Length: 378
Image 1 (tube, rainbow, N blue to C red):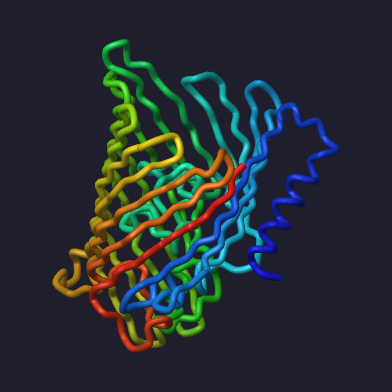
Image 2 (spheres, rainbow, N blue to C red):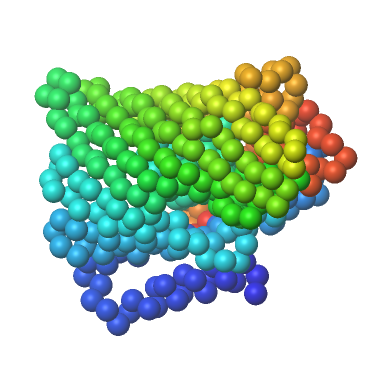
């Protein structure tokens, strides 16, 4: 059974199984998308994209239920194929209970979406974005599952600061996070020669503060996340010293215009052990993006962004240590359920999205990418 057919069956089963129940408080949402990628010079995101590839299918179904006025429970089931990543297995993106005491205080527990930056907790909801690919410097699609959610607890709320000062939204969390076995980080480790025997991961904790300013449409915020990663392999081990990822962002919406930007930074050291040999890999990762869009009509939206990534701990003149991506995007909504997107990427550098296993003859420093997607959401 193809991945697309499996997704269709998943949607039908999850929707149909609720027909016999009281649906007054149950909400069901989902999406299915089919993408196409064509690239020059290099294969991108583990696809054979230099010849044009349709191996990009994604879909999910979420179900939520209001048990009481204060308690809400839900989960999301997800299946995807992105080149050699993903596969036919159904995954649980998140599954949690949410108890809201009032507007100022609430609690969540389970596998919880991680609130960080502008889009981390919404990056799995394709239908809400103009972009075919979010800025890969901050939201790499080949590793989407790593930061998307964690297993643990969260406290959240919103505090009014007065009529002239706006509102302050806060989130604080702690738990465990692991590297998905079907994602890009796992494959990069495998391409480097380590056969992992368990999903690397460790303790994570952090928070987000988001200021909804008195200027209507303007939001400014910062996030912080501490993450530890350890994994064992047949040939050795992987250890990443606990590190801090800091994120600063802003967005502004006015009428048909939208503008946003984000800056991310993390510094750590990865230590790879293979037999008696120890290989330290210094990491000083800096990334940022700036984007803008305009809604021409109810059905048509256009926009552009620039995404920048660099590892300052390495030689930044080498293409493998940076990625610079100019992007032009367009979206057309056929109706309230179906939409299409098309996007041109002008990539300089190979620091993100390129794999040695799908580029056996080496990676050239510059790549142009055409990415298109058609989607159905409900």
